[in-house]
Image (cartoon, rainbow, N blue to C red; front, side):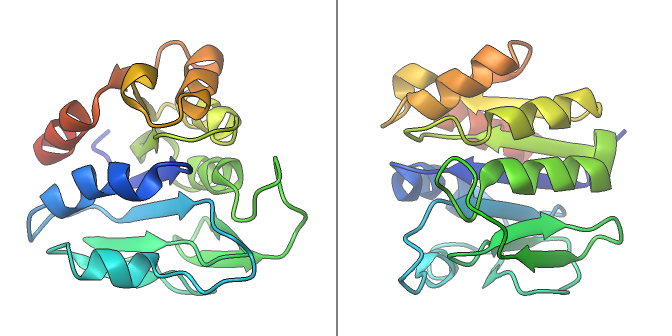
Length: 185
């Protein structure tokens, strides 16, 4: 099944890692990309603004009930879980933090796995806790593709290590290899 969407999770070192990936995507990239970065709950996020200036694709902060549009990069807003609904729209939730995180990578990945099944690519990048590991396992269980930044190349290795421990069949790649992979899909 051809991929229909990409979800990315990152924490400590996220801006540097995402800067290696997202600006490399060329105009006309056909998949939606949905990104959760662990952010402080009490501050406005500058992620969409920061990457809007660097990327050729449309970059926005996801809003409740927004339909998911191809070729758009969405960032989760701070202090909300971002979920993908089966009708391919977003919902925001104020449920309790998961692994001390809201937004949670696991919450996004698990809901997106339900919505996209084998048409989903999940990517776990640098980070200092285990968020994303359970979600990546859900993506692979639904027939999707799991990609993990090689722990040795991550600013914080705990998150990619946890993802690979739960999903040993996931593809471990450097940021450069992930960027090349995204250009080919």
